[in-house]
Length: 182
Image (cartoon, rainbow, N blue to C red; front, side, top):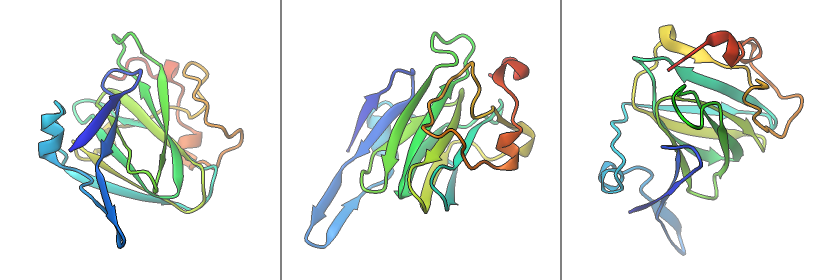
């Protein structure tokens, strides 16, 4: 059984799996297709991705895949903590260019579900962060895209002024340079 909590962005929601503990520790189902479908969430996840980030203050993102290879994501923090961010890139949406940020930690089983039509990124709040996410479409380099982490038209409040970035993320275009993505 899961609890689903909507965010201010339509379709982006917090997933709270039940965790059962005793004197040995705890157990939980981190994903159950049956529980998702009973909650009205119909996804067919096809790939799991996992990343490790060594240093606090690292920003990864904002990333997306263009149609027809767009991806929904179910995101989980396995070690450390992050501020996980979703940005609405659906041009017909009333929340176009709005973003939501959620703190995910290894201690709390809460997950973030981001449907297709959104960019995704996160900043590490601790050193040595492990992060895992399920996607409902395979990675496609030809459809891979990104938006500059500090795009002023989006205004994500990352909590860091001088983050550690990859070369790719440093050079990502601003959304206005891309035009419609979805």
